[in-house]
Amino acid sequence: QKEVEQNSGPLSVPEGAIASLNCTYSDRGSQSFFWYRQYSGKSPELIMSIYSNGDQEDGRFTAQLNKASQYVSLLIRDSQPSDSATYLCAVLNSGYALNFGKGTSLLVTP
Amino acid sequence: ETGVTQTPRHLVMGMTNKKSLKCEQHLGHNAMYWYKQSAKKPLELMFVYNFKEQTENNSVPSRFSPECPNSSHLFLHLHTLQPEDSALYLCASSPAAPTNEKLFFGSGTQLSVL
Image (cartoon, rainbow over all chains, first blue to last red):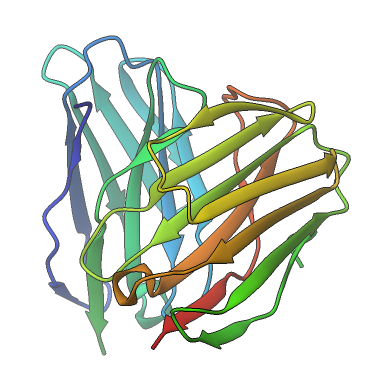
């Protein structure tokens, strides 16, 4: 079973702090990695994708990938209350579609 | 809007009913997906259609029957469901499958089976 693991949280950070979200995956052959954000009652939306080892930055978001450790992370700088949501890690392995983790609930407190 | 429309948004059905979920995408994509999202569980892939051909059936019970008449439309026919089938059913599309590009999700159908 190819698994994607995330801590379900909730992760609580104060406004303006850095939120760090982590994900591990079991399929060593995985090549593409994604972070989706899902607000309560809404559908997931893509916020970051990363394909090679290292960091990928987009505004306040940085995705980090370490294939040797089978580890993906998402950093959110200057966290805002509007960032409060569930963050889903997704991995494309040998199948035709993404495998998702359970998601980490993030709460940014004013 | 995401360009992927799902109807109905909410559905309540008895275990003996037959109903259908509908998904339509206006993005010109060739791959469409059904995912199931239950509380405390990861998004579970159910079916994948690529250029109208079913490419993946993720061991889904036969009480769920997909139909993809063309690349823009996807249905999920439901019959004799169980209470544990209550969940959010999400449709998604992408240019093709597999894809390194993002999935475009619909708003989902919240299904309750009584």
